[in-house]
Image (tube, rainbow, N blue to C red):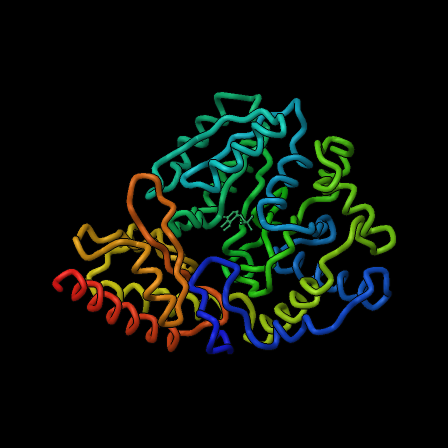
Length: 373
Ligand SMILES: Cc1ncc(COP(=O)(O)O)c(C=O)c1O
């Protein structure tokens, strides 16, 4: 399993990522956005996404034309009203981005921020909620892609539910592979996008939310295009998106969802990603690279490696040399630690990861030799 096209680099990134030939081929047809065929296709995709999230009859999957951040902003703007206050759990850039969004759209918030290499203390969360009745909503990130850390969603949901508060989740980088049952966890909403573990192409964000909670906040969204309630009601009415839908992206996502089913569903996909991660981490350790996180916190989505403090190493030439050998990695994003990141999701398997490790070894040797000369 590879990116199918030898001239293109394999994307070892958290998305856009390497997609299969069948997903790319699904974009060859043009769809009329008001055509009944497209309306049916779109409805089937939204139903499948809702089911993947563990949503039921009370939930609706609302798609948005745009990237994942559009979905997160729409979730906060449509499900938090100005009289409410959100407690944002942050241990990376995507938690902090939720605070930026709230600041920008005029939503009141507190932030419970911990270091990027640790998770939040459920007991401290309980104390904060108990001590401040004004905090009616909690917002959390499932897999914090900044580092690759898996946050304990079940613990967060248990504490939030016991405190009688609502929970909004950014599950962008894990949706479609990491276990998630929003009904069981009592989540109000989950935001994700087409181009990560679903292995579709970029261009579509979506939020699965309780319809009654959206209706109860009708008119609250500060943006016309990011109004989830209006988008949901339009789709429930005549099946039409309010504005031009990314038809090819939806068609590719329909194919990607069929591919997910053919693979055996999220659990089987997760097992493949775990094998990718374990092969990567073991191999990189052998080559002298250290992961930034404790193994127990490392999600099988993306791994941050600590940058070597050595004369031969600089990120740009390392990145360029790997790209020349057919692999695109990702720059680091952690605040206190120099890192680079390697994704383990997408249409790739351990064979691709093994080839990547061979490339890393060759690049390290080449960079060290250049220094000697
Ligand atoms: C956890 C998380 N949230 C939000 C985003 C933002 O998504 P986008 O870059 O598609 O706007 C990302 C992107 O990687 C992410 O990993």
